[in-house]
Length: 95
Image 1 (tube, rainbow, N blue to C red):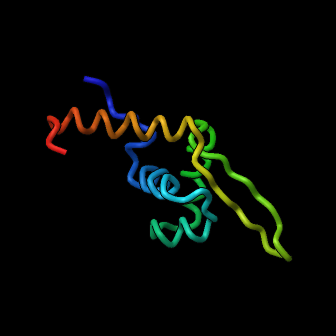
Image 2: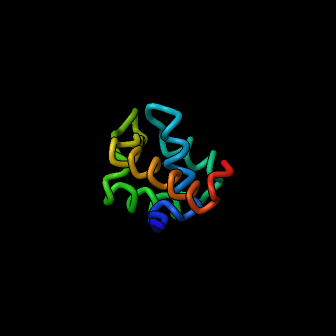
């Protein structure tokens, strides 16, 4: 049986990727509120997902405030699909 992707096996990273699956793009504040994480922890996890190529992170200045936005990449979508498939295998197809 395949192993679950350790990058997605983190609760916060899995939540971020799952949220991004349902929206075209999400800003940092939206992700922080939806995941109920701290800004520092979310920043670290976004960096890990970005380094893996699972998400794209863009930063811009809007007015005088920085805005960070994230979107799921094709690689991230494929990784999530593989994760769910493997999880279903672990559960014996009951889902």
